[in-house]
Length: 327
View 1: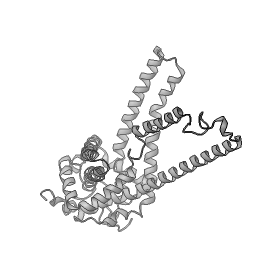
View 2 (view 1 turned 30 degrees about the horizontal axis):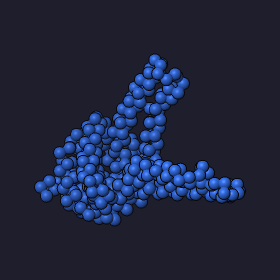
View 3 (view 1 turned 60 degrees about the vertical axis):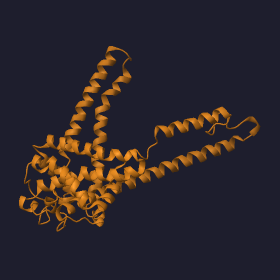
View 4 (view 1 turned 30 degrees about the vertical axis):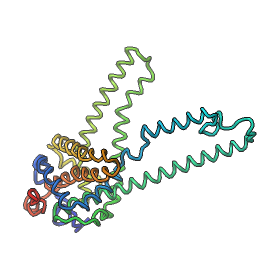
């Protein structure tokens, strides 16, 4: 990424070390103040970026709710009460007077199986597309913050500028996701022993306590690893590093300040939740506004912290964001 305007070093290459300690770079009060000021500075571009980011991050909005499940169950129950099941092949769908040949039933069953496979295939394609867009937009989201912090201006085109590091971000997103899945699987593994002991016995209780203790230990390790790797994406996007070098960079930069980073991330995630929460009172329309604002409050201060950690003080002093506190 030589010569990129988004590189953290003036020469276009990564910095060898850090220029501040983690608590000084990731100052909570400054992050809150600058997060609010940044949204006031460029509201529409940040709303657009936050909306795209929220779409690719996923959420529960697209998942069936308990009301949906209840309605579906009621549909099935109504079919049974009426003598006509809602599902082919269930009692009540075909009566003796229908005289439907068994071949027709097999054809219907094959058709339904084909429809199910088609639905699963479409769902898989959608998941892959959203995953790829998440890597692309996520990188552009970081660059948008860096641009706004440095210059005071934010262009919507910056959201779609991360083609140069797209491949690396895809690999990193996949790797981090697999690490999380593997960690949960390792943490849950001892619970498999519950299937081989007698329920309500002393052994069952012991195995359960061991499983819970092990899971909590693994969970603590995953949280710690999250802090160690928390600057990897920024190193990829803003310093142009390959994935393994970015991981090493993140481990190096976070050394000695990981507890502070965990507190920082937890606090700003909670603030993002509080900002988003009123939107649920207005249903979908409200969330479309409050969720992007919440993501700005969560993510932009983190990008500023990365820049303060990796840039010389005289460079940081020239950033436009330093004059926003009273804006």
